[in-house]
Amino acid sequence: MIAPNGNWLGSEGGAPGLGNSSYALRFGGKPGALAAVFASNKRGNVSLPFGTVLLDPTLIVTLVSTTLPASGRATLGLPIPGSAALVGQILPMQAAVVDLALATITLSRGVEVTVQ
Image (cartoon, rainbow, N blue to C red; front, side, top):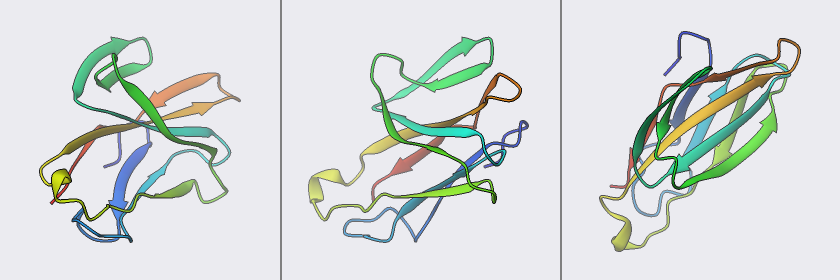
């Protein structure tokens, strides 16, 4: 989903089903900007000067951080293991983009992945 600021976070490679080794996250924003994708174990709603963090701030992990290429798009492979214990698990995620030239931080809309 594309946020009003132009940052986005989505997926590719089919549904997040057990054993799907092709599942991946896609994210993007301004070419050359720093970008990161974060995940948590549940949703949050924390307003900050640069946007709303939609992840639980008590447990946020960084899945990837990178400089966006000229295309402004990047991909993170996120293969889904074949463990039946994962079925129904929900993983909320959100991307952040830092534009060093403008000294700004912008956030994507939140995405939730439910393992099938």
